[in-house]
Amino acid sequence: MSVTAHADTTVHPNEPGTPMGKPELGILAFLGTEAVFFGLLILSYVYFRATDNSTPNAHVLDVPRTFIFSLCLFASSGTVVLAERALKRGNRRGLVLWLIITVLLGLTFLAGQGWEYAELFGENITPSRNTFGTSFFTMTGFHGLHVFGGLVMLSTLTGLAAAGDFKGPHSAAVTCVSWYWHFVDMVWVVIFTLVYALPYLGIL
Image (cartoon, rainbow, N blue to C red):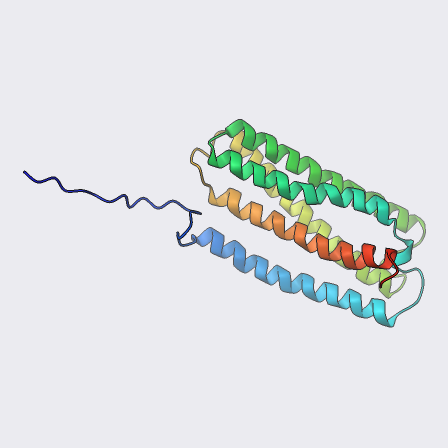
C-alpha cells in the first residue's frame, strides 16, 4: 500500500514570491499614469514659480497650519498599514477601527484644505489671479480630488469590513486601496515640500 503526498498548491496572494493578481497589476498601471500626471503638474508649478515673481505668491500661504493638517494625512498612511495588519491577523474589529481612523484623518486634511481655500479666496487669491494662483489651485485641487476619491474607497472598505466580507488574511481590494492611499500621501509630501516648506525656509 502506497501513500501519495500531495503538495499544497493553494495560492496565497501578497505572499513573497507569489505573482501579482490582475487587481494589483491594474492599480500599479493606474498609479503609473497618475504619477506622470502629477509630475507634469509639479513641473509646471516649479517652472511658473521660477519665471514669474508677481504677487501674491507662495509666501502668502499659512505653512505652520498646513503642516499640522498635513501630519494628519501622513499619519493616515500608518493607520491604513495597521488596518492591513489587522486583516492578516483576522481581527475584523481592528480592521474596521483603523479604517475609520484613516477616514477621519483624511477628512481632517480635506477640512484644512477647505479652510485654506476659503481664506485665499477671501483675499482675492484665485486661480485666475496670476500664474501662481493657477498652478497652485490646479495642483492642490486635483490632489484634493484624489484624497476625496480615496476616502470614498476607504469608506466602502469600512462598510464591507463591518459586514464581514473580508474573511481571509488577504484582500485584493484592501491592498489596492492601500497602495492608492500611500501614493496620494507621497504626492502630498512632494507638493508640501515644494509649495510650502521650501518657500517658507527661503530656499525657493
